[in-house]
Image 1 (cartoon, one colour):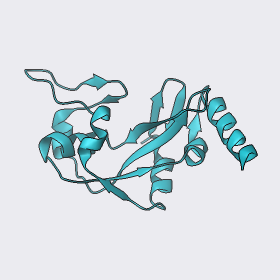
Image 2 (cartoon, rainbow, N blue to C red):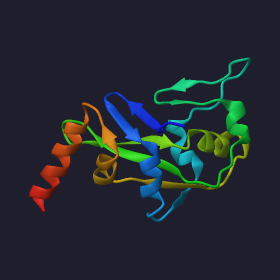
Image 3 (cartoon, rainbow, N blue to C red):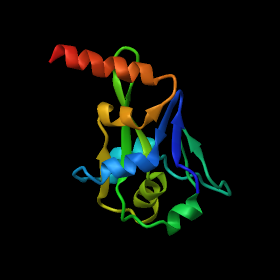
Length: 139
């Protein structure tokens, strides 16, 4: 099995490395509804799977996944320094928490820009590097 990579508009994240970093961080808990924007409400009818912005979800796979691992967000940034979060691991677990189990809490970890940079490649990495460099100058 090859390396698991999450890609989004010029950023590629090594998910296996993200899992290693996340294992060293404190797990946070939240109502899954806080992450609704990452996984929309299921379609009605015969549709299977979906593409919403960044995540494709197979509902039958989600129904059989276990929610024992936290969902993982990387933090990226635009050229102006504005940061954003990307769900890079756990889309099916989040979907299950939102729509199948209707869980009251979901475990998650958010990687900082600096941590995300260590697992990122692609053309947008330069914006992340500039952001990290400017933060160091300001401190």
